[in-house]
Image 1 (tube, rainbow, N blue to C red):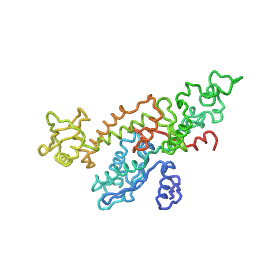
Image 2 (tube, rainbow, N blue to C red):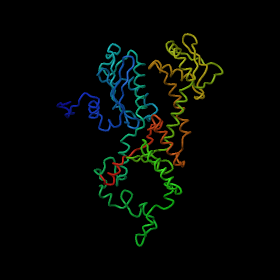
Image 3 (tube, rainbow, N blue to C red):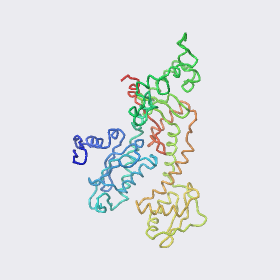
Length: 441
């Protein structure tokens, strides 16, 4: 693909084949080389509408939505419904100020989509918007759940940069901005380079003259976080080694230490993993609360007097059509004349709430997307708040078995690569990258 003109630089992209791998290579040429390793394939269909493409894992995000591309029957569009569906799919795995990276292709009968609603053909109008939105949200969430736990490769790259000598003194422009070079930083004594007097491997009271090699380890208080306890018998140690070898094959490996009373350091066969214990457990509690919340009817509280909400007649009709679904979420409503509804019950989890505003928001949501996601999202936010207060707090010391149990739960829980605020729960650094840091590669 070549783009050339007198007023712009030439763009030349090498040819790729029409296979799925070839298509992803073409996407990488446009989106960047990091995208394939941090994306998940999407392929789903419903009632004659087909959705394919790739979406980023939750820990791979951008500060804006400019890298969200959508195509309808091969035509590029900037459609509000599609953008809203993408936001909905990532609602509880991304921070509010971050955006997923997506390339989505919708294929459907041209007769059920109007492409002439915008002079520049940037917007489209679907005959059944609820079907399209539901397909996009469901397909992306299913793809995220099926992909298991994954950390963005950009986290490892950031860790690599932080570990390099002189990293603390570099700005965004690196040495070119006038900072010291790598060699200068590594020769200097100070925070950015090696200083023998500051090295934790050397006890502070040990002089080089006449010091015995037996003093070169960590001091007892410095070693406490890594203490494995009293020596076990040979048979017990063999059993422990075998169990540890099994854990090394797991995605998040075997817990080796807890540092700064918040971070779990784990080892796999080919990497080092650092887990934020509070963020990780917050996600686990949140998912458990959501499952309990949506697997059975939500408890409701009866209003002393029904609240009458005046609405346009079409909004009242839409709410009445969804009354059974709303009742499952703890909101009991019924028609009250031609242009009003009566609210008799509200979800107990919401406590005291503005019933009128809640019902009007629901009516708008149903009118736009033919769904009742507004109430579900409100309940999910309550669950998120409860999860934050009910999770393992920073500063709590964990035993080895507690740390390993947390890692196993993370591996079994969809979306546990980020907490419910969208922050990463762990970072993985491959052994090959560590060896590069030490000049072994």
